[in-house]
Image (cartoon, rainbow, N blue to C red):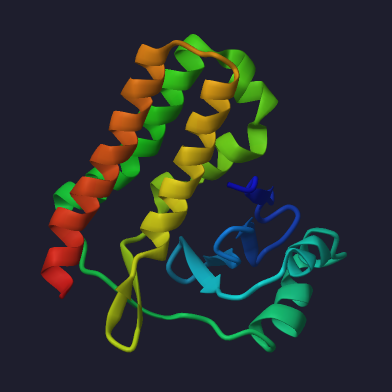
Length: 192
C-alpha cells in the first residue's frame, strides 16, 4: 500500500475556496475539499484516474483556488453526487468518530500526533463532513467513507510500524469500524 498524500490548507487564510486535498496513489483518486460559504460547510469532490503529478502541481500552486478552477475542475471529470438526508445516528457517529479516534491516539502517543500532523488533521477535518453519496451509473461509490477508512488505515499502519500497544491499535480499529458500520446501516440502506 502506497503512502497517501495530504495537503491541509488554513482556510480562509491561505485559500477562500480550497480546504484541503488528498491523493490516494493506490486508487488514483484525488479528493478536493471545497469550502462552500453559502452553506457554511466543506464539500468533498472526487476525481478519478489522477496522477501523482497532478497532486504535486496542485500542492505547489501559487493560488489553490485558481489552480483548482483552471486545471482540475475544467480538465478532470468529477463524480456526480447527491447529498443524503441526515440520519441522526449516522451523522452523530461521523462527527464523534474522528474525535474519539484522535483522542485515543493522543492519550497514548502524542509523539505520533506530532510526527504525522497532516494525517491527523485530515482525520480531524472529517468530523464536519456531510453525508454525501457519490454515484455513477446508479451504483454506489462511497468515497467519503472510503477516504475516511483509508486515512484511518494509514494511521493504524503507522501505529503498528511504531510498535504501539496492540490494545490501543485494536481500540482505534474498532472506532473506525464502528464509523463504517453506522454509516452503511443508517445512510446507505435508506438511499438505495
